[in-house]
Each structure stands twice: as C-alpha cells, then as structure tokens.
Amino acid sequence: MSPSGPPPLRLGVNIDHVATIRNARGEAYPDPARAAEIAMLAGADGITAHLREDRRHISDADIDALAALTRKRGRPLNFEMAVTREMEAIALAHRPHAACLVPERREELTTEGGLDVAGQHNRIVPVVSSLKAAGIRVSLFVEPLAAQIEAARSVGAQVVELHTGAYCLAVRERRSDANTLMMALREGASQARSLGLEVHAGHGIDFETVVAIAAIPELAELNIGHFLVGEAIFTGLDAAIRRMRTLMDGGREAGGGHRAPGSRFDEAAA
Image (cartoon, rainbow, N blue to C red; front, side, top):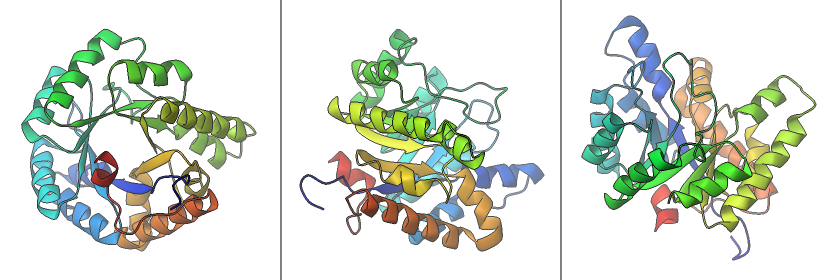
C-alpha cells in the first residue's frame, strides 16, 4: 500500500446468529465458539458478538468462551453492547479488544439504526471514558450524518462504525436512491477520518454490496454477520467467508488500495 493509499481493510465476522439457530431448539449446537474458530481460519481478522439485554442469541457463557478463544488465538474480540450499566460491567470484566456501542430496543428484530450520540452525549461520555480507561478501544455505531460523527469525536470515541443498512437495502430493492445513500456513506467516512476517527462499516452487507462499500478509501474494517451465517447454510461458513474476503479485497483494490498480508484489528490500533 502506498503512503497515500487507503488503509488495509479488515473483516470482522459477527457470529450472533449462529447462537440464534442454537437457541431456536435450546440445544448446545451449533456452537458460536466453533463458528469463530472456522471464521478466523477462513480469513476473518477478528470476531464480533453482541450480548443483548434480552440474551436472544449470544449468552454470557458465549462471551466467556469467545473472550478466552480470541485471547488464545491472538485475535481481537469486538463486543457490541448497549449503553447500560450491566453491559459496561461485563465489558470491564472481560476487557475485549474493542467495544462498539449500539442502540438497543427489546422489540426490534435487529439493530435498526445508528446510536443517537448527539442526543445522548451526557449518557455516553462516562461509559466511553470508563471503557477507554480499561484499555478497551471504543467504537460508536452511527448513521453517516455529520452531527452524529462530530458528536462521536466529542464524546471521546476512537472509532465510528457507519450504518450501511439503508444503502444495502436500497441496492437489494433496486431503488433509485442507492447512489445517494452511497454518497452519504462516502461523505461520512471522509468526515470521520478528517476528525481523526478510525472508520468502520457494517449492517446488511452481502456479496452484492460489499465491493462498492469496500472501495470507500477511508474504511479500515467491515463487520459482517447475518448474511454470512445465512449463506453458510448453502455453501458452508468457510466458503462464505472466503468469498466475502475475496470480494472485499477486490473492492479495496478497485478503490486504490490493498489488504496487507496478515493485517489485523490490533495493527491499526497500535
């Protein structure tokens, strides 16, 4: 990669919905930790897991196992969490590489949008400070809006993860606003980087949308989960991740950069 080129693009695999399938029958399988092992062998740079307040998929025991596994393998765990005292305490107990603060409502099927950082400034600041003091890298999941990105910097986060769900849905539905939504992502990524924030992206990314997203030069990391778990039903998790890895690397090359061999989350954080 040239000094002026985009940063290496990392892949974080979210294994939440392996736990969703397990919990549908109340069995011990499929095991999210086994999925994490396969993901890392297939090209994932790290593992993402969201422990929700209602424990609908990932459990406390899963976080215990994933924290131990990623530490043993020397790979980062990205702990997605709501801004609550309970989740803050769990993060501080496990000290994952990163914590991504996300909005959470019990009635939603999945995370439906970005965190309102601007509107919840005073609530978010102490949590960010507490996590950072423990050596945890803090990310905020936000919409690609100027006010939210500026607020992310003001509360002390090191990273923003841009919500790509609206763009991905527009592409799948063949809507005319897909280009406008992509432009918003590009502008948001540029703004965030100019403010000194590391820029990630995630939500709804699939084989059809990953190339264009990966070409955004400011992005350092993509977090992808639900699609990969679904595709694994047909092709296997290893094959699904390897294809995603190939497509995102192709998108990054088309955008003017490349993946550094062996790149990892912690190398960008160093």
